[in-house]
Length: 123
Ligand code: SF4
Image (cartoon, rainbow, N blue to C red; front, side, top):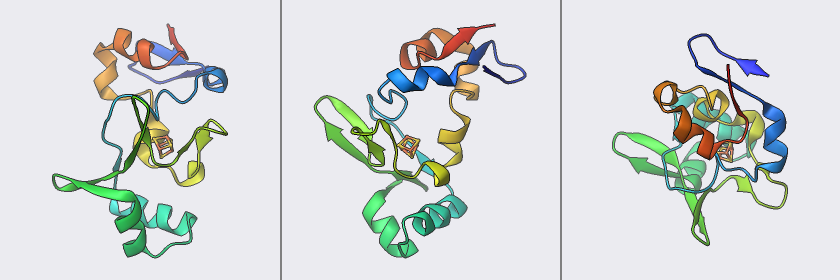
């Protein structure tokens, strides 16, 4: 069980096994990446940075976000692998993914978070 100071919930990572990647699929959203994270992702995929940006990123305002792939009614992160139920760039995934579900946004929206993530436990 993972807890973070200041959050009214804990996270049980064992729930990921049967979840189907709800945090990487579903509603369309932003998966922002910093310049350092772009370099790390490009390196992980053994791609040049420019090629990586053109292939996997799109501009959202002044930031870059990872592209999505539409699967049925879902907007999957382009790196989500439905066959393995996992992230194809897990070791280089951006901070936004690493820190989920402990986002400031969810501190006061725990019911919304529980609908997205079966690993959320009240503390
Ligand atoms: S980069 Fe990986 S962990 Fe992050 S949303 Fe995409 S598939 Fe999920």
